[in-house]
Image (cartoon, rainbow, N blue to C red; front, side, top):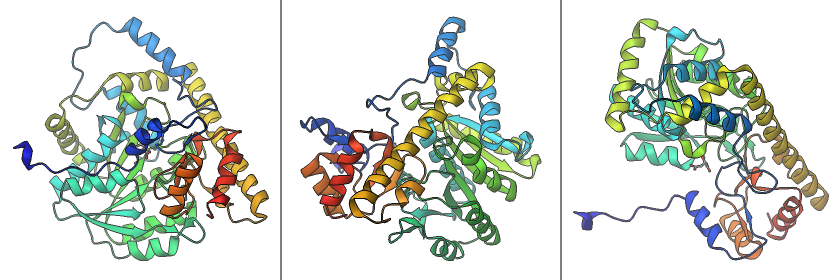
Length: 394
Ligand code: LMR
């Protein structure tokens, strides 16, 4: 049987990790995978996470199964963090999932189960794994324009025009904040127009919220997701704790199904739990318990929010430094978009050849579409990157 398997294409983001590790150059710079790094290149365990883990180790008396949907306290805490008071709790069904990717996968499985004819509409570009999972599940895929290659900002007119062609019942996949890979995001006005069009088409929005707290702050970053949840009869939200709690390897995420008809909640909840059972039975618990401990303890929560703010502001400072340096070198505003973008990523708009030259000549690693991870920089490497960008002719 195994001889019938074909090789799978390497994941474009993850394969960069091994290429970077294999590069012997000392001054190489890793701007690839979306993992936060501090100025020394370390991905720290957040203070509140360390303390929550200490308390858990001391207090935990069993590792017995919890529940198919995960610990209800995690669901409550995360629903409050993401949705605020946008919708009553009774209108939300939720399951704990292995990371945000697990939530995305379960969401698409739910779509396929409930409406096999539905297509998924994804932004062009989007996180490559969105497309890969949709294809893997055999779901129809369409794309809508998103990125304006000239301004490196949002192509809102193209986006609205394409969303105007979505069929009723189709799923429109939206990045709640900090668009991956471009860093370009809709304004609040843009979001109102996006919501109006998608609603008018009778489509189902699905929000992927992987970077809450990395853009403009915890509440601002959730504003679009909350607006979507309040506006539609039904929506899906996949949220990740990997980045904002820095617990990547613990695989902690949540899928929420929000509905106006609270009478459907029990059935939807049962279907979500069913999907967990089919795919991996009980979801991982440790990361979820750490998150719950932090969110429900005022001191730990305040410390987590403070550290997250430092991380967010540090990335904004790096954006400003890079934009300033490029302004100085080019004597132009061509790279101002780097200051405007939000989250970990910016798409530079370099060609694949320029990306290859940056890697070969300068040891600077970024994704092939010229996405850089801002957090991979520090004060010393910003001028190096700026100079290399100009040298490569970007
Ligand atoms: C990224 O986009 O780099 C991250 O979301 C990590 C991943 O799994 O691709």
